[in-house]
Length: 277
Image 1 (cartoon, rainbow, N blue to C red):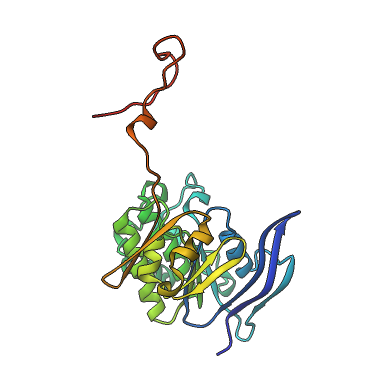
Image 2: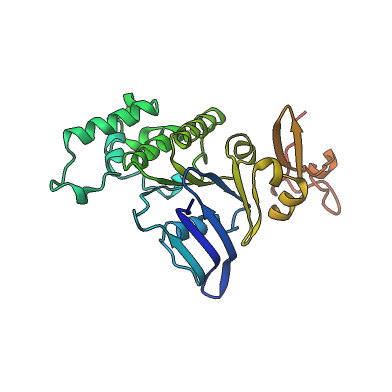
């Protein structure tokens, strides 16, 4: 099966600084993949290359043109201007391609579709609420609704669970899994290794280059994750589950006590650590 998107030996740099080097990546119809890696690893840049918002410095990006791949993008929440006066339903309606509609405002059928998607995402009762008044998890679902109303073939999400609680993050991954089972191709970035291990069948470990890619049970090893994050990562496997965590550094209580000042007691005008019993 031909890929929807293919990156071959792609390199990208902002000026003289290289952000990505020698990237080979295929996205096939029906694939569900996650990019994982530390901050500054190039994950968002790679998404922008896939979306063709950036062009490669070197290498080749192929995107199927016949039929053209229908793309939808869910950005990081912190990039959104929350002061803009708009409701949840209006945000969802922004995902409609108005080039197909001669009228500048949504039709009744489009409003009904927006409400149906909001209901599917369990936020139908929030349709007329201002977007800034919603919780982080609710806001994320609204922007997911904006993407879904476009009926994309490829859904691209940048850190979809940032700023949401554990239950909301779990729900978002469940919804994405259901969409993938319905045939949607999904590519996302995430810092949550454990969510990726539990829900995503294909993981790409990235740190300016691809360190490894494959199913989580193959690439989530201490050696590969430690190379990706350039730190000491612990991986625990139990009951067919994978848990990854940076190894904590050992600190004694003396490490956080105020250090004595030469000639007497600590200076009480200077900041000191507070230790609770």
